[in-house]
Length: 456
Image (cartoon, rainbow, N blue to C red; front, side, top):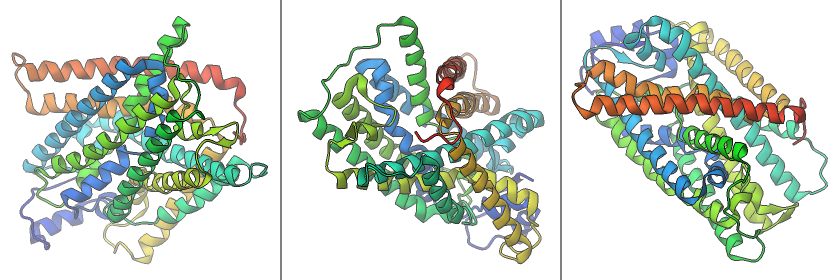
């Protein structure tokens, strides 16, 4: 089962009927998606899943868009995703009041679109997006560790894959945290960390941009029409996927009943952090480095290996980033953990019984080992992740919420709400296709440089 029955009251001990319903849940829902959190906990989860180190790529996105289009795109991304996630939450609340609380994205698709949509479309793309985020976070964590190493020892001989394996070792421990709700305090620390490295990135950009150390400021766009057009679509995809989440139902599943209004408060917490970080990093980074902004703004703080800011500052910023990446990765492991728990655990036994602990440790460990191996073996995974994001984050976050809302609440076609939702879904469907084409083009351009276990 992927949904629970009516929400009867908000007490700590459920009435007998609710307790029976809980025993009917499969192990994934019962053990991983525990419904015990408050609205502030949802704010922590939302912030960790959205305000992550990929935001450090926003100045690079601005480099292909320019000032006006860059800022407008960032504002549109914030407004549309806040609206989208709120609509998705309203659909979840509505179904909960009707006695069918959906705990997973695929459960929503099963109920609203039909079982084939959940099984063959929503479920697989959500799994790809989330597991891709785990692999990408592991790779980025290894790259940040290597950056620290090279600042400390410019002639060091350690390879990138060695640092990826070290980060994977940290993930191996964190993956054993039993439930999504158990991550609430880790995600509070994650919230502080994302504010910290964003403040560091902003301060460093302003410092370098105000000194003679930085490059000459050039905000001109690429003169080659083909490169410029594909660069625009790639940048729009970067901005869209930076706002991406893909696990709104799973986050709302962690809330204790009744859930009405709680997710909206959590979204306000999250988007206060989004506003403080996304805009400060993107604007300061683009101002300082212009069209020379790199894919990760932290790499702009080194000029041919020479630090443009104090070494300790670079080390501190990278440490903040690495620690938050571990929280991001373990959050995006939750859908995988839920699937594994559902497959191997026995919901009639205790959560911490030997019958459930042994398969949990083995399956989660193998999941992390596989993600770490892929990250170490494919250091160009970022290109592949862009393609996964185009086919995954875009539909999950920018298309399906509007479709779900229109099918659930059936707003009048004579009113503006139906057509606004339909227009947003259509525009972002087109953008998803163009972003996928741009991602495939980038893969074809970079393919000649691909090497397994490359030290990049």
